Length: 297
Image 1 (cartoon, rainbow, N blue to C red):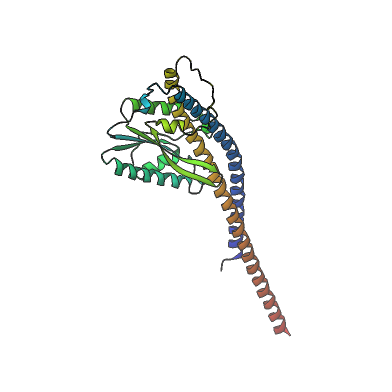
Image 2: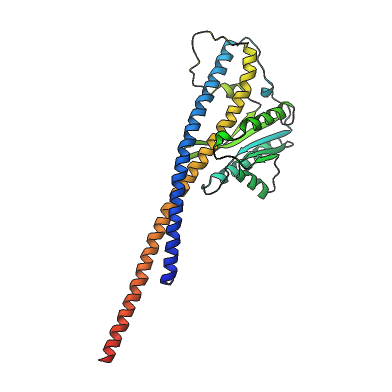
């Protein structure tokens, strides 16, 4: 049986750990609230863009509108995975679930396109660490990202991918991230980013743009169409980054809450053990004293 000093040391360590996990839970909760606000605002903006595209498609139904980012390739030889993950640990199974989605997506793509080469662009330190650990190559990794996902270089990254797709370096681009639903519900997701499909771009609008009036697009519907498609694409990536950051904070808050409760349970158990050992020693000492007194009599 462990001695009193050992139990006391463990009890002190568990209580200190409990304080740390509780503080981390509070910090994650505060960051989660900010991240949730950004997610909601970006979804409203994305919905407005989709409504605008729906209105544009409706008013120009007779025109044959096309865009290089919507060009489907007959043969897929090069595929790019844009992986959005976390930058720190202590967030439960968040990073593990992203890695599992990466492996699942690669297997599915290899079955669908056996001769295609799969490359990756990584956002976050944890995906980069995983790719290096399993010796999987990647094109570039953005590991040192700000805590605020609004400050991430999404515009530059997406523009680079757009150029590579138009130039034929990539035939398909898939986006892997964790979709945020609530603090306890996050879903690892893989979406086909390029070629952008018209139904996917315009299918998630709120319907607010469906009015009976006639929309006038300046300078022309074709130019507006050409300008809005890249914006929708970049908004999708920005939305994924915000969803991923909110999911990371939610996972960390949940994990730290569970760790705090476990530390409390362990502290209670150790305290009971400490009291029992202490009581046993006191009883033993009292018996020794009584035994000595009887011997003297």
